[in-house]
Amino acid sequence: MKTIVINKQQEIELNQIFNELVYSLKNTYSNEDLLKLTGIILKESGLQTYNSKKDITVSVLKTTGKYSEKIFTFTKTKFRKYKTNGLRNQFSEDLEFSKDFLINSPNKIIDTGISLKNKSLAFKNDFLIKSKNEKIELISVALMSLLIFFASAGGEDFEGGIPDSDLNIGIGFHRHILSHSIIIGFLVEFLMRAGIEVINKTYKDLPAEHHKFWDNANQYINKHKGTAIGSMWAGICVHLIKDSGILGHGMKPYNGIPLELSNATHQGIFAGNGALSGIFAYKK
Image 1 (cartoon, rainbow, N blue to C red):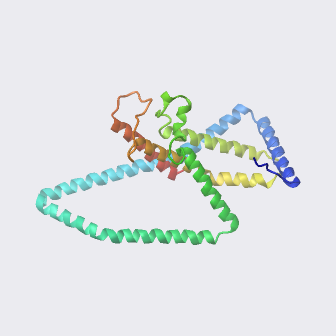
Image 2: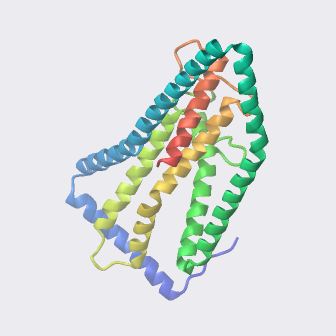
Image 3: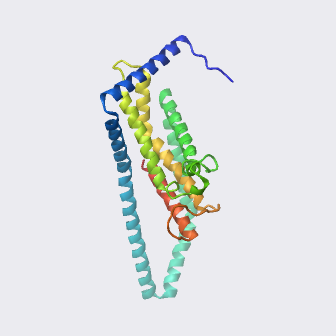
């Protein structure tokens, strides 16, 4: 077992950081009533969680409605064409369209590949011209995202993580609707935002002259909190998609649903919650 050795200057700085933290905590909890402070933090965290998901939820519903309308209109128009032109003539026309689409598909795939390659090169060039500190920050954010993603999903095999935390209560609660749906994601996001609000409150009550560590840490946390929350949602997304069984794995039905549902319905609920978690990961 290796022992971490610090020099005298590092020891002084660590003591300063610790003493400033103690000062801030004492100042925070003496200036405001603890119950009142908790209420403020919970309210702010709840509003942030609600507002972050409100717009994307409305957008998803509008998009679903728009595409449903398009599908209905397309089906209606196609039915009229078959009725007007006759089954054989319209089928031949649709077959010709499908043939042209398949012939042009390789070119479209090549164009997509070229576009992705150009975007990758642009990202690489953009990364290379950044300063050393900017590169370090980007790499640290990427590592943070991966750690949070796999911790939420349950490691490389996506077994465990946030959804399977219900096993801590007992095997009988495994795959409960509360832990294997977007409900658990909202709860964890709320707790993450509450933790950040506690940090922000503590930061405001630091001594006027404090170690630069606090400024750097506070700035980093608030700048990248959205990425951290998005990574958590992405982890829940892949876990629920795997649990749905649509990728070929077995599917165990939900617990905690007071209705008799078919396996296909259970699978749909898993997949639907996984898809919504993926959308929330994008809009964090």
